[in-house]
Image (cartoon, helix red, strand yellow):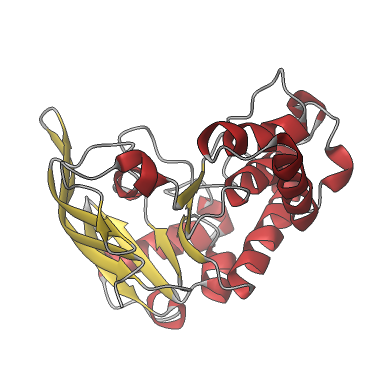
Length: 259
């Protein structure tokens, strides 16, 4: 059985800046893998290469046994297997919550209006914002908007969910609601690749934690090992900064575009 995600010798450069320097790893079906590391370490770029929002400079990316980096692949068909949730919510401000969750279903999956609405309401219920169907995004809190974004991704029936720092733009008191939704997805068996600085979530939910720095994987393994008993000095230094409240901003914030 193929891996849900298989990344082989992945390189990505932006001009002369090499952001990914030969990354290899896999995610199996039903697994939750959390990617942690300082800003600029390559985490977000790695995630964007998985669904080809960024074209790798070198290497292979396969999802569900389909090589996305094959020049002959039907990339639109392959991408339909992937749900992506970004730091920013990317909702259409002029559309209601319900329409935001319906529109891609109708345009990409060619679902009829009634079916798209049924699926949208079901997934908005799953993430706890069913009562907000008629609201517009700017009438919602950041946490509610991010949950709508998750519902929109789930409505496309993805085999894999990608999360790029999904809580980094939220006020601290709103983070818990979004993490609770992600925790429930993990319990329900969704395959997830999550770039995050939420160490408590990674420790509790992840099957594996990958620590990146300088465009390479420095350390990976079960969360109790990587977060609880890191073997590498770079990992220890990063975790000390993130877990020490006095250094909460060091390396724990959102990655820049070239991350």
